[in-house]
Image 1: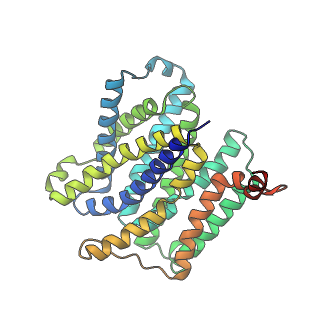
Image 2 (image 1 turned 45 degrees about the vertical axis):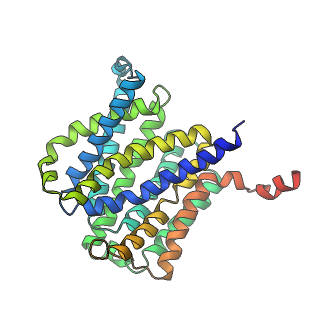
Image 3 (image 1 turned 30 degrees about the vertical axis):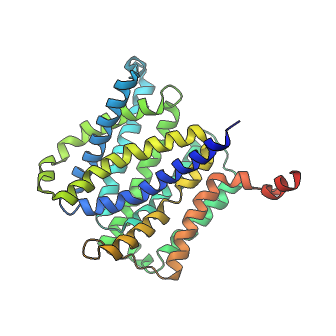
Length: 321
């Protein structure tokens, strides 16, 4: 049984992950003023690779590479590696065209694609709560883009390009997540991520221009380093949260990421209007953003709250108490 203090710590760590993920596209957008998207993606992956290398060296827990002599495992590792590489590169390109909030709202599609893909790949049955959650999320996306819905399909503006890049990033992440799900049966999470980060860093290197980082001022350099450290710290907090709390609840908290991106974007725009732009949404846009988060959250933990035959499970638990 999970101790109460561990539950509280797990909740705090999950919130830290959501906050950090909400901050990262804001920092990325600021860093992209001085470096290109691929260089930013490479620097994030390189910093993460170095960080996990030091951690595994300290713990003396490097994986046994002999396991990848099996062709199936090697192919899965490549799918996971290039899936995450595509996600980082595409997301960095999307951020230069979109606000932090928009990029994270579209990013929630990764959850939808992963759930639906798992149903086909792993023969998993979608729960009614997942179908409801996905439906609410999709409706929320329509509301969020209510002012620009025609731009996404009619005129391929920079905004439309950004949205489609973010959607492709979500698809790429889903491919990574599917391969990762299989590989985690044989490897610890940090061991697998170490291999994936190394693959991404090596293959993205020819397309990056690290010398451009020298042109960054102090605040831009901080943003670049923060983006890299953010990946390690957020991942570490996520793993620690799942060790102390149920994975479904942790995942539900991380779906709050778009709301944190919205809050921090507007806060920074008020404090530093010359550096950050305000996110202007109409009432339907705000309702859509909340609906996307609510849909993703219900798809993740809805089965703990509601059953199609038993009704709301929370009320039943209270009656039992």
